[in-house]
Image (cartoon, rainbow, N blue to C red; front, side, top):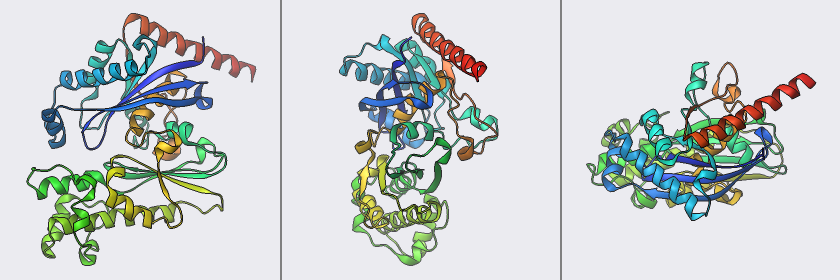
Length: 371
């Protein structure tokens, strides 16, 4: 069987704007695989669905399943790939969305086996269930010549460090600060739900950074504690957004300086997540890395807005190859596991998935015996 396959990754970003869909072509096997993103697209939700998700109001699995299945079909059609040629769909969803019933709808409507719930197995063996995407990031972004820092500005600002020519066990990962989730919550609360996000950072840039207010924002501060502190200092909504944005980037910069060892090698800093569209956040973050221009992860083949969708596809591929996709040194799990749950597609597709998996397992057994 050819070691080349097509996979689709689907996710919903922290802003709940729509479905992120990525078509990924993978050659090779396991940790020697060479994934490449062939197509990426974001399909907006209907306004009613988007607002329900942002407010935490339940949305039916059928509504979301229809949206995600449609996004997958349109993506592969645009690239002129037959949906029947897709081996797996990887599904990455926020913890607030019930994934099982949604995965059933996607499998039913596309006919393709869906792989989901990849954090659950890690937590079952003592892990945090996070970070779960570094194995995919490693295959996509590793470099032989430069250290790479990947900063994801999503609901939380997270950092992944890939040293030059590193083994997968050499990665460093940590959460650095609250991020878009906090800023969006402040906007919603400050505008009484009339607005959901500070698009481009236009409100924050009109405010003032109040040092006394910033000093009261400790650790994983929330929108509620931020507003309580803001009232003490008579800060406007714009002042609060400006101050919180400054605090976020300073926490990111501090985390990187404390946790990333100096190597003397060339270094690239790449940014992903919805925060890349916030010009004010980007400008302040750049100041934390003097002499190192920030670049979007698009430049290394990972769509900045679709990083989680791409990771879902690659992790699905690793799992069906028989590779443990969680990294215990990062998650704290007691060991590596084949993570995720498979929801079978139609008979033809499920037969292809099981045949592929059986072939990889047979090869593994033969190599083990030979050793």
